[in-house]
Length: 258
Ligand SMILES: [Zn+2]
Image (cartoon, rainbow, N blue to C red; front, side, top):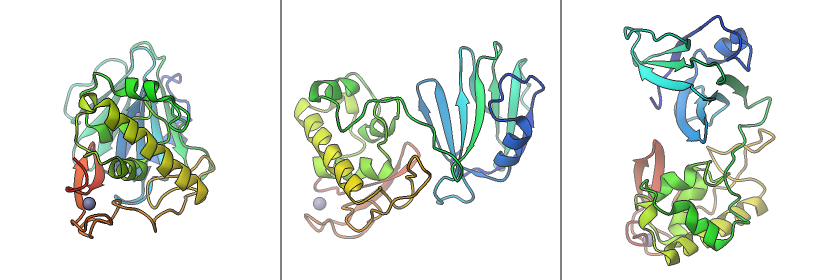
């Protein structure tokens, strides 16, 4: 779905699911590219932009409510009762929002005019070490994906995740539930350093971060791994590697991170 363009939007006639008026929502969505999709609790947030690789400039937020579901299917697939939205994608797939009880909500946010969807996770700068470790206990997903999960920790963007994993010496693909207490504590401290530093530099990143006012930060001179694919590691000179993980570009040093 990542990189797919929304070519056409159909909305049903029930008014309840549309937090943003139907016509404005349809006009906003059509033509945009799905850059990434993440889930935070009962919300699915689709980051949208004019071209793949561009920073997001809009979000389509699906509040699932009690019975809402977002389906990826094809236009030919039978349309279930209580389908309120169908988004045709350039790849030939179709996204559908189905919600029998209509407590779910669909919202379009233009990030040039308003704030990005606020996450509900813990605040990384103030969370206690024990609570931080507890966030990852029993989780099977890669640590990088867990860090980006806004329902767990809020405000950890792609760059912060890569940089803090580098400083903690942890490979992004490691199973988060298997990290030792010592590794998690290194990670928590690294995250605090990276976030503190970013705040000092007046924002954050190159491509994937927009602050609450819709202002993009600048923070690229001192990255250790982010967007440094093939360049020598600042600590050991091993070329930095880039992989795709949870739909996001992920950068790490294969020697310093284990
Ligand atoms: Zn290295």
